Image (tube, rainbow, N blue to C red; front, side, top):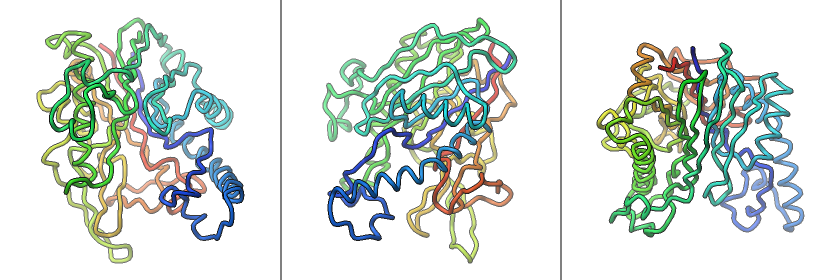
Length: 369
């Protein structure tokens, strides 16, 4: 019996318009910056037209990437609300590619922009095993005090009664063909702006580290610290951190070279340091683990993994030799691929946009013990 499990940050699946760019140019789209806009009313009409014109191509590509993942259970990040999820699932996944999902789960979390994590599930796996939800639980209200995770680093930017998860940790207790499986869906704190002499990644790492510690505590409190490794669980989502990266060195027209390097520290060391869970993407070759291309000019460009399937030791051991897949056909043309990794992009993909997402779906076929 097998289960296909996937995660994908679809980026801003919204049902509303953001008009704050009229007063805050940092939030204004680059197209509108090219034109003189005389009033807020005109700006709103232009922004609505821009978003509507761009959205259909984008969501067609998002749907194609999801269809290529062909998951039985799909963990999503950056969903506005259930209405957005239902409209996308019916209008794109089901009607466009004939690959819809009957079961949909979303709980409103803590993100200031209102983007949440969600789960889509089929009623049965591809080989006919029933997928049953026994329980679902949001941990959005859990505070640092609740789990005794507050420390001096966090005190610089947080208070003890602040919520740990900047979005949520959504916990699903499932039966797959009668076999127990637990799923934890997350979207960790994003990398912010530089602060106190630290870059955006370093300055926000204490928050992501606390989120990772909280996920681990939730799992260990449920199963027992000495028994968690014997259970079937997966932690999935965009974790906004990486333990390694591939530096892309060079310029367009002059060619590129690719250099792999390990990071000295990562918030995700909480999961890996003592074998609590395995990042199965690391089973792939070192230059072929990336799920996102990051670039801020030719002096700062690299490939890294932000999107994860962490498996419990029991589940990972039961699937030794299996590799996860990374779906990259929705990447924009500006993404620089190492030699031999180039893919055929979806129709109408642009240099920067439209695109399925800056993130790539990660999917793996698992046998459950």
